[in-house]
Image (tube, rainbow, N blue to C red; front, top):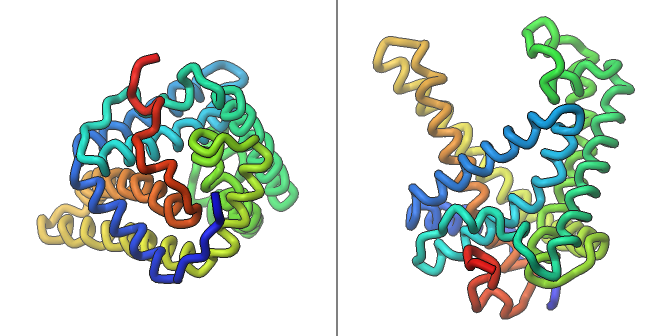
Length: 266
C-alpha cells in the first residue's frame, strides 16, 4: 500500500463519481443511508450510554456505506446487510470496535473543549439535551463554542476519513489507521478542499432549488418539506463518494475484488 498525492481536481472527480454511482442504484443507496441514520437514532436511545454508543458505531456504519458503494460501482444491488459488514465475524471486527471507541472518546473531548466557551450549552443542544431556539443560537458564547468545536473537528474528521477502510480492507491497527488517514488528507489537502467546496455548493444549490419551488407554488411552508428529501438524497450521494477518495489516496489492488464481507453471509 502506498500513499498517493493527487491533484486538486481529484476532489471534483470524487464528487462526480459519487453522484454517478448513486444514480446507478438510487433506491438502494438512499435506503441504506436512511438505514444508517435509523441505526444511529435507535442506538442513541439506549439509556445513559446511547449518545456515546452511537458515536462508537459511526466508523463501522461509514465503512458499510463504502462497501455498498463498492457493490453499486460493480453494477450490483447492495443488500441491507452490506451496511453492517464491519460487524460480521472477522479478523478486523475487534479493531473496528477499538476505532469506534477512539472516535467516541476524541469527539467527546472536542465537545468538552467547547464547554469552555459557553458552559456546555452547545453540547447540550447537540446531544438533544436542550432545545435549539433562536435566543440560544444567536448568543456570542454559543457561536464561539460552535466555531471551537468545528475547529477541532476538522483534524478529527481527517483522522477518521480513511480509517474505517484502512482497518477493514487493509488490515491496519486502529491507531496506525488514524495516522495514515490524517496524512492522506493532509498531503492531499487541496483535493479535499475542492471536494468539500463542491459538496457545499451542491447542498446550497439544493436549498436554493427548494426555495424556488416553494416560491413558485406560493407556499413558503413547503420549503422544508421540499428541502429535507433533497438534502437527504445529497447526503446519501456524499457518503457514496467517500470510497473514491480512499481509492485515489492509497494505491493497492484491494478494490479489484468486492470486499469479502460486504453482503456475503458468514
